[in-house]
Image: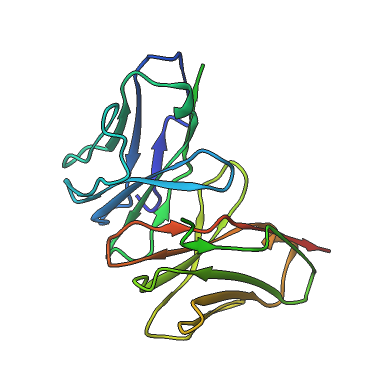
Length: 112
Length: 112
């Protein structure tokens, strides 16, 4: 597609439950990025992919977070055993040449 | 360690006048800079970018200036329109495909 699509728009989980977020990058884009926005104006990088390969995962809290980008499937970000502090808006972005990144609308995760 | 800083949390201008948003950075490895606009409950929208080999890039009403020696960039919007009212983020990256580091954002309000 011409836009980055993210599903679901909202996700509510009880503490300790699993959460799975999906991202369909712009067709033809080879880079995918995940960012977490906890405070209103603060973006934290999580992980990036070049095609289906992890490019940079230095931002990921590895104990509970995992992500994949498999061919012909939406990319996914999974949080096992969610904690209250995981409540945030999660943005996915894609890029064709690694310069401009185009963002999706985000998934708002609320952990109760 | 805040590598990208936007020191003005807010800016208010009259319709038709110039809006100037500023951004400073500390990491000399940054080689590409971007400006995004964000409305509430939406993802950031890419506006304009500049490579470190240039000092100016223009696209319609938007112009970005880069002063490498001062590690400073600015976004000029002329003429400003009420629809430009949003939060503006400055972002930077080190190499092609790498993560973006964001500033804290500046809330621009354009008054009719």
